[in-house]
Length: 323
Ligand SMILES: [Zn+2]
Image (tube, rainbow, N blue to C red; front, top):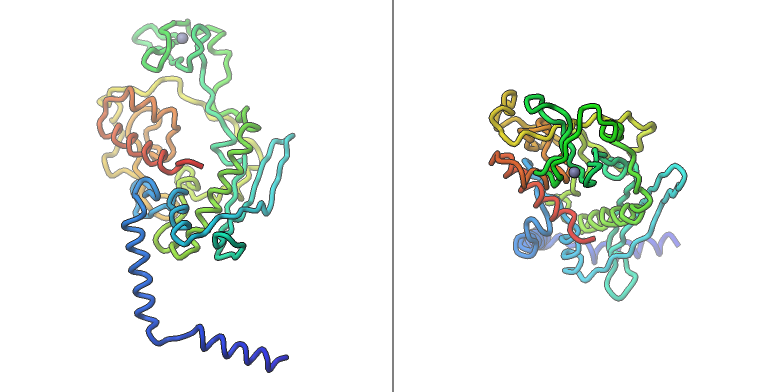
């Protein structure tokens, strides 16, 4: 038996390990791969760059193209799952096998996970709603204009005004509240785990020195978070949300803005641009709520802030792609 094994090992080694020409083969393979990345993958569609960093993130569309190039198909299995409808907690760990098309032969695999405790599924930013028109457009009126509450037209409101003490306004719960629609998102959470697994599998085809997973999904307040393992034990008290809308005029809003090169670093030390104005001033642009970005693009005059929002929205659109 042992002799047989030794014989087999010797034969396969001789067949497989051929140093003659290895340098040329490796160089050619690398050249072809880099050419593939340059000519087939599209910046902003198949991959994107974290704002302010050099790191490229492979998106799902890019992962699919790479798999297609090698005639591979994805086969998913759920390795672990938690579905606690009472808590509620949903967690999926998925493995994506890339297999040779028309067969079950596995070429490589990648693991991805997602859970409902990730901030973007767990919380909703609850805003005051106008009792007249139902729009989420209630802002605190400036004292100079008599205070009170205003349903702001610029934010899609009806212009109704309310006094400071109006119960129908101040009685509303605001700030970060547990997401009431978590049950609707179970499918999304599973899809996200699959997407992450798919990208991980594609990276395993020899692309991991060129691309990474989309780290933005894993960066919170400038700190690296491995989201799949981050389950907050206790709900944090909701953070108060400023009712005053960001001031569209940058002049009186940039007093303590330290300048263009003010930036935050993520866990990898990459710089992410810091948003310069309004209630989100000082936050990494990757941390801005989507609602705010859409609102800001309509209502903000500050060119550099607007350019930041435009780029960030494009990046998110490309990243989220179709699932
Ligand atoms: Zn209204």
